[in-house]
Amino acid sequence: MELYLLRHGESAKNAGQGGGSKSSNRNPELTENGKKEITRIAKSIKRFKITFDTILTSPLNSAKQTAKIISSTFKMKGNIVNCDELLPEGNSLELYNRLQHFASESSILIVGHEPYLTNIIDDMISQQRSKGSPRRSVTNRTGVKGITRLERSIVVKKGGLAKIRIISTTPELRGELRWLLTPRILKSLFEESNTVEKARQKKENQTIEKVL
Image (cartoon, rainbow, N blue to C red):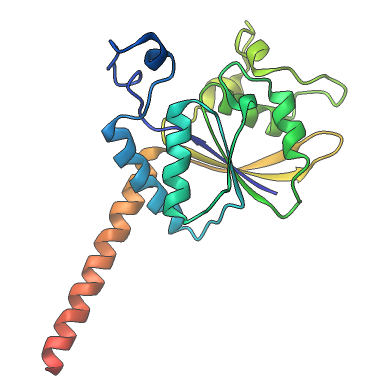
């Protein structure tokens, strides 16, 4: 199984655009800049020839809108699933149980929040956790005083994308972190590919003009 973890784009809360109703402050939408950024990132991801069978998203607006932009860019239909397990206070155990029901050849995109995504990565790739130790919910993990070095060093930035290759699903999910791309890298790849495409198109037009 290929597991991709994407943090939502810039929300009104992240941009300091509070002042709305209490409900909108608790569940902010993406800013216009956030929507544009995720659109560029989605197009960049598509150029990697990655495909997603399913998108699991937090039901909060910032994540749902991010998931919809990805789905639209990849022309997916009806493959977005809202998961309460991906709420900031959600229980990771329930998420892992859900993932274990997917086929081994599946490609799954998870759209969520920090520090939830970082904790998922830590859970799946950490070699320090003993085989018999119970998994904890993300809520319990975030309050741990003795935070590990791994959790401090890995951070999924807004619009950042990580890839984990699942190597075992029983008795628990285990995986390898293949890469972690920042939004800056993803956007630069998009801009670079656009530059190459424009240069190719210009050269093609010049060739046509010579022929004519």
